[in-house]
Image (cartoon, rainbow, N blue to C red):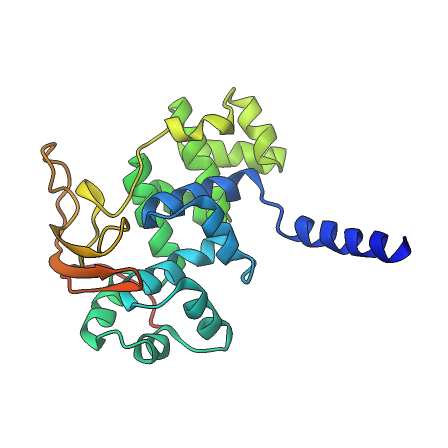
Length: 249
């Protein structure tokens, strides 16, 4: 009986270790949309890495580098830089350098880009929250509530600094985080949100072609970037053009 109790205790402890906050669950949904996978798969990958916001660069490397996200994560955890990982998994140096300059392997530029596309947020508003001490989780909370209630993200974040709890702040603005999917638009790999480099669709074997963001009938956004890519069950390869910033890891 004691042995069973101990096992159950360890199981509960492990479950608690991977408990997700409200904003982490929202971030999981965003990554699932972005990479065409299930949210459960996102959190399955996250178990080996504490911060879900680190998964953007990991999944980007996996998507372009013909390697599983778990393999990329293990290489990263071993201390390898993104350039070393790209070489290890056979990514073309030119492709890696273009994606690196666009910020695909730097978590702040990655999330800034996704937040701007999904919620129509200006970079200036993101930067204000960051300068006031906001983490990526705080930026996401401020942007989601701000978008839903027509408030500036900085004003929402200032309220959070007084409340010190995002659920309490959401209540102050009469917003329910469970309705977050109704705020903004999904940002995936197809249509208007295909990033430079044209990664493949996630539906299975085959080939896909496409251009950069904004190539839809709406005529919205079309920053530099186009290319061709092949996909298979194991990963993808692509080429792209574009401008942007990012850290050299």
